[in-house]
Amino acid sequence: MNDRFTIDGQTAIVTGASSGIGREIAEQFAREGADVVVCSREQENVDPVAETINDERGGTALAVECDVTDRDAVEALVEATVDKYGSVDCLVNNAGASFMAAFEDISPNGWRTIVDINLTGTYHCTQVAGEHMREGDGGTVINLASVAGQRGSPLMSHYGAAKAAVINLTTTLAYEWAGDDVRVNAIAPGFVATPGVESQMGVSAENLDRDEVERRIGTSDEIADVAQFLASPASSYLVGETITAQGVPRIDESPDV
Image (cartoon, rainbow, N blue to C red; front, side):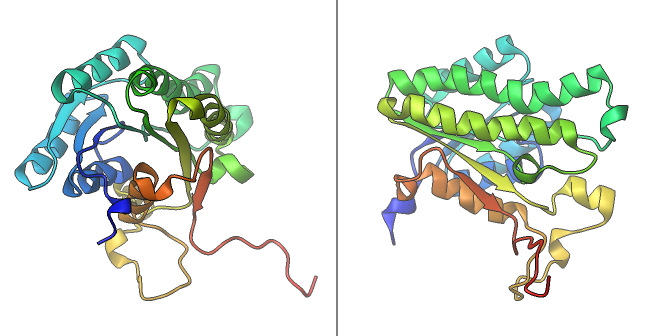
């Protein structure tokens, strides 16, 4: 066993952990021996996640209701984490939201809502949790970006702009906090078969063939594997990077052109 990949004994905060990628990251971290604090905007949505984790062996879980756009709520989240576990070793900024609309149809409120959740929420959580990391023994921050923030995405200009800002923040903050032993990286998933995607588009992770190399749709556990790597000592030389997890790359040109 290579202990470089272990996260055993860490304390991790995972935002947006009621379902999908966030829930899978929290559950995997706990199975690997981490104590996790899971949060979402509704306590009733995140309580079952903590209950599931606490019924299994490995790390424990604490469920906290938190709207990441509310600074007071974020401060209470981090305070609850430190009160229970004594420190914050890893922060996974997974909370996000989006809706599809042409740019000209996005209202000021709609724009503000998406930017607040995806970007300002990341700012709040990282600044508050990062203070404990920098004053303690360091840690890792893992931001969930998106391929939409790397190359744009039609009908998702607000979401893509916010995620592009998260990618830039990741690089900048990694430089500023390197001396405090805090590593900041990001993951940019492509299309992932989460419960939300399944309900909207009928694509289920259970129907994906992982015997084929030509993979166009990912699963939440595949993103969780990348998150574990970034939280572990195995990624010690990765600082300020955004790992794109999109399956087979999109190629816009061919030799015949």
